[in-house]
Length: 171
Image (cartoon, rainbow, N blue to C red; front, top):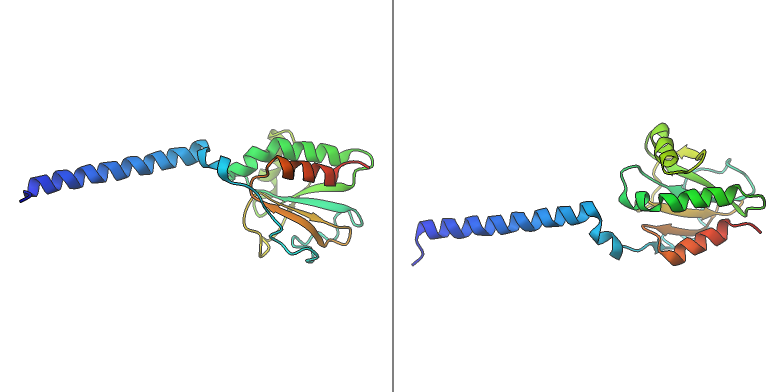
């Protein structure tokens, strides 16, 4: 028969083990261990859908690569150098698309966040989070009429990086 003190000791040990597992899990998320397994989802917004961000008046007639970001997103942090490269490429003469950033956060906070990461003069627009946008980062390519051509959500892999660069690139 198990004595009350033995039960208390077992319960204390079990509680300690569970607490340790939780702490290891929190630490793993903080340092990014699970990020490696997360990949971008493509096509989460139906092709041909009307402008999900309400940016019809922005750079009319030209394709628009819209990056939906937030300053507290670790995947956005991971992609900052890539976004800087996209903006630089879009600024080149003959680029096929412009790059803009959309956010639901205060514009100045997001501008500072992007500028600290090397994105020069980031065009940032305040938007209401549209339905169907799963979170950040989210990249949506809009045609000249602001209809969805392609979409990615989550951390981009090498293939999606190349696709986005090609879509923005020069002629």
